[in-house]
Length: 431
Image (tube, rainbow, N blue to C red):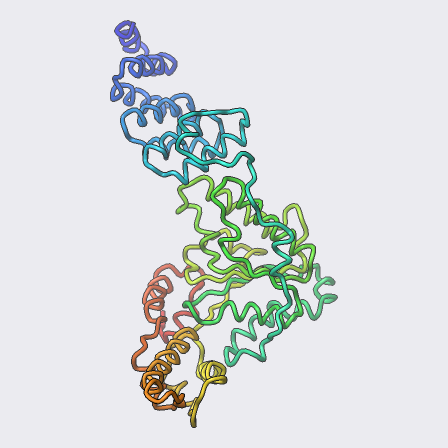
């Protein structure tokens, strides 16, 4: 039969049904390389031939090429979700020992077809009996939602950043009627970016304190869940809680982990979380007026460009290492409850240029350790001096330097629309 079909194909080389039948016969005869060749030719002629694509994915799997099969199946599932595609995908993931991904695929199969059973999957994968595991609930949100007792007065320095936040966030809330007259919404999203340890979280709390708003500090681990659909539900619940408790500030640290560029996300499940996040920011099915979403990231260049569109994170603010005044204030705050003697805060602030708030805390810890060694001898705490702290500054390397070495490259060569001009200004680099 195969010989007859091949002879017929010579007379009609673009006959796709004939070509597909030949490929399936090759598969039955375990001649996978020949089958692969014919299936690829079919897809080149008709890129929408899903049967050929599925057969090709199966062909890859049979040849012990699970990664190639997985790429093809994920592309198909994005366009047309079918149980048989997910079943083969799950087998591919098991073959690569990607148990978490296989669990997610199996969970999605059970959502599509609750009656589906597979002994192979049950033997290797632990899947909950219901589609919904423990999720983020309204009670969870309210339990850690509070009004911060700090404001901008509690943050030393950073005047430019506070001024920008005031103009873009606080003024609209203080002059609601003016904004309503022009049909402008109150709230929206801002993205704080900069080196780690420079006070982005503290700044977000102070912003909520300034506007007397509820504050939801949401960690990535409270959103992301290994089961398909759970992360999306968690996100929706968080936004719904904020909508019920306006005015409310939602603060999401490490937002790049949640809103990574979809071109870099090779799992369909990851892309659906990003799409859900975008839908919540847009308030497609709900009203976001009176909700401020603050995202913080050390790597804004990994964030999907769709997040920077108007109405989303369209206000991007660079949070630089603390300036002279801020470093002075940080030393003062960190040393208040510790034994000290004649501290010259101005000298310490000058000597710790480019240090983050976390670096300054590390300086104080190093100085304390030195003092503890001496205190062990007689049991009497020795006061910290300017000299002790200056010596400790020399031992601590500022963590911001590594960040700026990477950020400088993005600011120079991937700076669409001047997005990272503030980095160049801080480094005194002219384009």
